[in-house]
Length: 423
Image 1 (tube, one colour):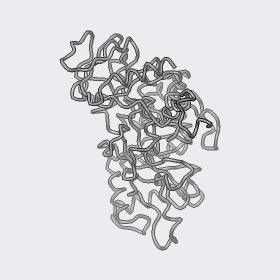
Image 2 (tube, one colour):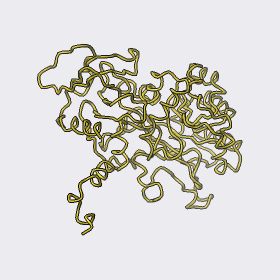
Image 3 (cartoon, helix red, strand yellow):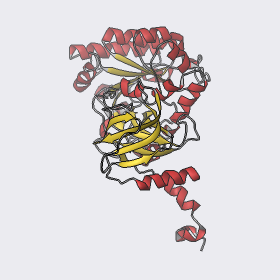
Image 4 (cartoon, one colour):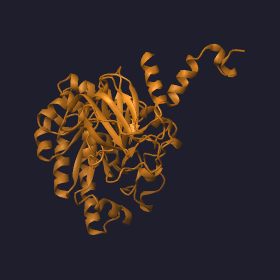
C-alpha cells in the first residue's frame, strides 16, 4: 500500500502538459550499449532524451523528479497481443483480430485467403485493457491477427501500437505479415502441415505473377508481394522441424522471418543464428502441451542467447488480458540462465529493433523518444510496481478501471455509493 501511495503521489506531482523532464539520481537501465548506469540523471526536452549523465543542470521550467536510486527503464513491450482489437474474449462482437470469410460463403464464391486483412484499422485506443496494461509500465505492443475455422493460416497484417491513448497509434515501419503454422493450423490446410507449404508456395506464385488460380484476390496478391522483397513475416511455429522449413522458405522467398513461440527453437539455434532470425519465446512454456512442443524447456531463452540468437518475449494463451505479466516471462528466463541485461532487452530494445522502431524507441540514449518507466524495484520481479510512466516525457495517468474498482471497494463504508451501502 505504501508503494501505491508513493506512485499515486508522484503522478499527481507531475503536470499533465509537461514534456521537459529531469529524472535525477536513477539507476538507469539503458537497454543499450551503456548497460546499467547508477546514480545518473536523464534530461528530456521536447519529448526526446537530450542527456544522460551525473549532476546534470536543470534548465528553467523543467519538472524535476528525484528517483532516489530507483530503476528507470525504457517503456516495456506487451508482446504480440490483441490490445485495442479485443475487449472481452468471450464476446465475439468485441474481438476484431480474426477474419473467417470462409464461414460466410461457399468456397466457389471467393477465397478465404486474405493477406490484405489489416487489423490496424480496428484499433481502439480507449479499450479498458490498454489502461490496465499501461499502468504496469508497458508502452507498446504489436497487433497480431489470428486464425479461425473459415479463415486462413496466413492471418493478415498488424503493426506496433503506442499505448498512450492516441488514435493514430500505429508506429511507422512496423507492419508485418502473420502466418500461423504447425498442428494447430492443420485444419486450415486440408488436415496436414504439408498442405501449409503447398498452399504457401501457390500463394507466392500468384503474388509474383500477379495472377493465378484464385487462392488470392488481386488485393491479396499485391499485399503478399510487398513481403517478397525483404518484408517482415512473423511465423507462429513451435516444432524444430517446422522452424527449419520456415527458414528455408523465407530464404527462398526473400522474407525476413521472425519466429514466435519457438518451443523447440533451442534445438535449431545454429540455423536461427545463421538466418539472423529473432525468436520471441514464452519463457513459461516448459511442458509438452502439444506434439509440436515436446522439447519445451525453461532454458529455451538462455540456450538461444548463448548461441547468438536475438531473443524477445511474448505470451501464449490470453496474451491480451495478461500482457502486464510479460515481465514474469523475462524474469523466469533470467532465473534459468539468461543474463539480466538480455532479459530487459527482450522487453525493450529487441522488439524495437525487430519491428523497425529502434531509431526512436527501445533504449535510454540521447536522441531516443523519452518513453520511460520509474520502478519501485527490479523491473523483472513480479512484486515490483511501475511508479510512473512517461510517453515522450509526458506523464501518463496511473489509473485504470482496475485501480478505480480497487479504490471504490477499499473506501470506508460511509463513502460507498448508495447502491453498495447496504441501506
